[in-house]
Every structure is written in structure tokens, then in C-alpha cells.
Length: 112
Picture 1 (tube, rainbow, N blue to C red):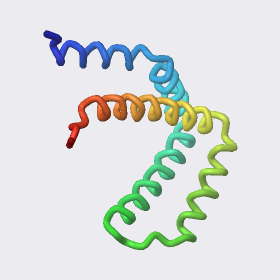
Picture 2: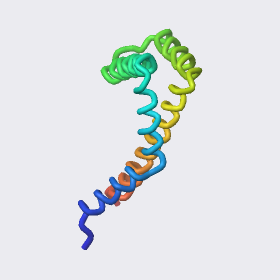
Picture 3: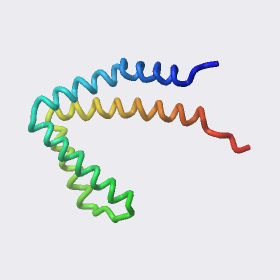
């Protein structure tokens, strides 16, 4: 019988050893080395989180707020350090999402 916890630890090691994770850590370190870039990204992420919380709580999200956030993202993407960080974060997030989907599909109960 397979020990699920051992397999989970193997999966964690595989994620930690993945190119996506290593690149994400590297780009995050580069971003954090510049306080201005780090502050801009943190401010942007806080604004994204705030809009997500409004949406989740059922509040109406103003279209102008979304547009302003989109424009801010466009400006941030002009900075190569921030763009590299966002792209690495996106690739790593996609990896985790894919793994989560695989696990979810494997344990889905059949309601037949």
C-alpha cells in the first residue's frame, strides 16, 4: 500500500525542484532587491486583492476601477524586472493550478 504522506512529500520536492518554482524564487529575489519595484508590486497586488474581496462579498466592482487596475498593470509590465517577476509568478501559479486539477479529478466521487 502506498503511503500518501510519502507521496505528498515527493510531490512537494518535485515542485520545489521544478524550473517554474526555481525561476519564480529567482525573479522574486531580484524584485525584492529594489525597494521601489517591490513597493509598486505590493501596491498593485493589494489593489487586486481589494477588488477580489469586493467581488467575493457581492459588492459591485466599478468598471473604472478595473480599467485603472488594467492600466496600472500595463505600466508595471513596461518595467522588465516586474514583467519577469509577473511572468514567473504566472507560470508557477499555473503549475500549482494544474497539479490541483489533477488531484481534484483523481479524487472526484462518481455519483452513478
